[in-house]
Image 1: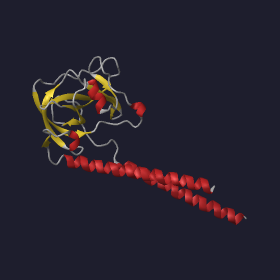
Image 2: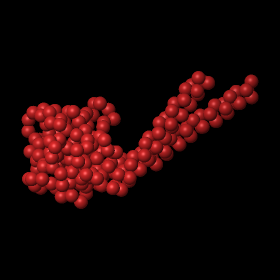
Image 3: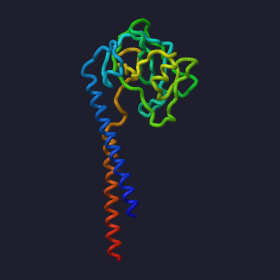
Length: 230
């Protein structure tokens, strides 16, 4: 009984610490998300990885409307859909993927949404936040985009290198630009650093630690009762 109690107590404490750490990480993300909007800056020749995550930047380039990606398994309000990634060719030849927002899945995988409309030819200046590509909790949830075939190409939690390969080996920036909500040629763009806030993780941490306290109380009571019986 003592060994089982110690083992379970260690598990409860570890799970509580993990949830508490996740809550602190989300709080840090929230602070970074809020701080990123303080001052917009032109990206210029700098790489996206050299700036803080969620930094607000302005970029100028030309759309490649013919080659776009649909990020699969992206939900809003419990509904499945896609996020649209459109390549933007910068003045120095680099490519930056612009996340133009979310649109719903219409129920057919063989009929993908039309996402080229509204993209004007020529140079455009855009404003948005720099962010990392979404990551999957399990490797089985990942699906790299096809290297050939029709566009747009569906992908799920891809790596930047996989997207670059699908685009024919272009010089692709590792981060994407979350298009500002006021910009045209976009879809639903209610950007936020996470789906559920840190309060949920803090609550889970307290819950796990409460299990540990309850376990200790039960262990002491059972041992006292055993001694009394003997």
